[in-house]
Amino acid sequence: MALKGSIKTGMNAILILVIFFIGLFISGIQIPEQFVLIKSTISEEIYIAKLQNKLLVIMYFVILLVLIAKKEYYAICYLFPLKKKRTYLWIVGVLTTVVLIQHHPFSFHLLPLDFFEYMQLLIIITIITPIYEELMFRGLLILVPPKKFSYPMLIISSVVFASFHPNFWDALILGIALGILAIRFRNLLVPIIAHSLWNLFAIFY
Image (cartoon, rainbow, N blue to C red; front, top):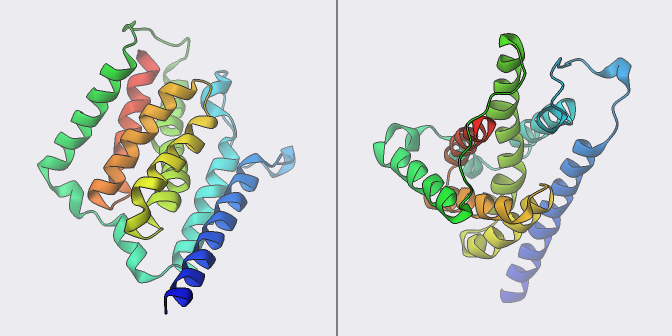
């Protein structure tokens, strides 16, 4: 029985890795110009990089969830935690802790964008990017594996998450914070909201 359980765990781990690397492949492929359906007029490349790819990855995970995911995984998308005040206290508390640990001086600034470009930017960094990154790093790598692996996967997912960001240590701290929220609530929507708020904060400070 122990051997059978180990084999099953190993196979599940391989499946998670395959799904993750397919997601990475989709996020990195160069899409021909004629197939790009959604374009942005924003010149700030750091915010709009791989927009089309991120949307494709989100579609990829939605298809997997609908077609092959077990019903137990649907719970990670339930709205129930969002109906409790303590959820938002956790989000504020965790993000405040990240700000204190990172210890960067505040400097309010506005980007040289018009109103419609700001609307595009807000959609990209507070909706598309958080959903894409939380599906990849907190959903697949933390919430899908068995609970007993939650904290080892918290470290692994945070390191991988940080490796895709220019400021590794700041992203590592944020990744750990978002992972803690995912583990605490066993829910993906909570870190998505926290990630959205963080990105909104990061635009102006």
